[in-house]
Image (cartoon, rainbow over all chains, first blue to last red; front, top):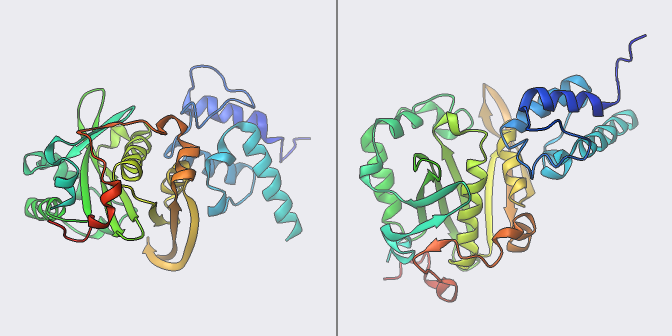
Length: 88
Length: 217
């Protein structure tokens, strides 16, 4: 059976590698903002992808570099947003 | 004395990692610049989107900014090819409190997504804090403009206010977000700029800050 909500990390890595074509494949702890793989315009695609693929709504307060710094940071944000959704 | 004159006038140059900034003259205004302001996509998230501009509008805007004692309008030029790709405007809102607004425009779409705005804004803010002795920068955008939100937070700015339903966008009422950044927050995000002089000529108005924005001559 297909898992409708897989762990975000490999999905995000594949999306980032495909969309931004960084010099080398990113890992879970690659610095995406500091290394400029993702900038303020690239973030739009990433936000849309996360919201669509993982069925979460990223609030304005979470549109900040710390939450998109690495794949791990994005996974933590997604997990938090899901748990907040569940609690609501 | 105008703010531009206090900053060195046409000699002012602020050097960033990807861009450099200088004052603009009427010679910088042409069809390409005019095209930026009349391009719906470029202005999608701005109050300019419903207006049509002519060259005289740009002359008036430029002349007014350059004659102002509280606004500093700088062109953004790329280090790679010295191309004028946009502008950044620093507007001192409260000289006593040292608070200024910063806004920008990147008109050349091919330069979007290259870190141009982040580099230009960080240089302008660094200049404002260090050379002009400003104490805080504020900035804002409509909530759907998430690239701008991310840019502001990347500068170290904090979300200070959400003005509910303050603007219209695509026939929908949307929130306006206001951000603010103090020097410690900015230099936490940009430690490489701390104590670096990135501009010529030497401009250190910090001790004279009460004169800025008050029409001093």
